[in-house]
Image 1 (cartoon, rainbow, N blue to C red):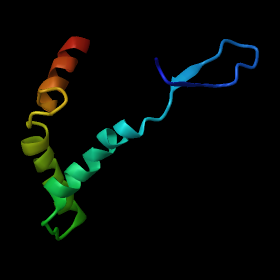
Image 2 (image 1 turned 30 degrees about the horizontal axis):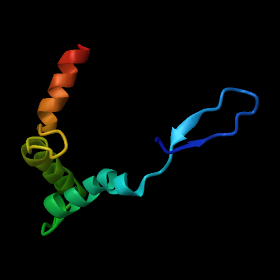
Image 3 (image 1 turned 135 degrees about the vertical axis):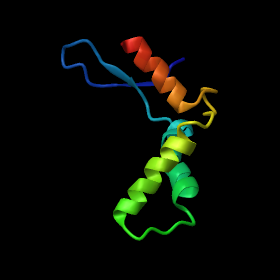
Length: 87
């Protein structure tokens, strides 16, 4: 059975949305912790520009080439496949 919360119908077809699920909340927010622990922790930066340059390199060389747990695919590979698909 699907757990849904429905908005008042107001004489129209009732629109339903899936309710908030605490079990999956961390899946979305875990990305912030991943960046903080893997890209930023233990580093210091002389300027904002140096920080941004570090994040750009880290994203390109580390984050986008690692195998993502849920999909079993690197985010860069996934993005390239989608871009080929949509033209």
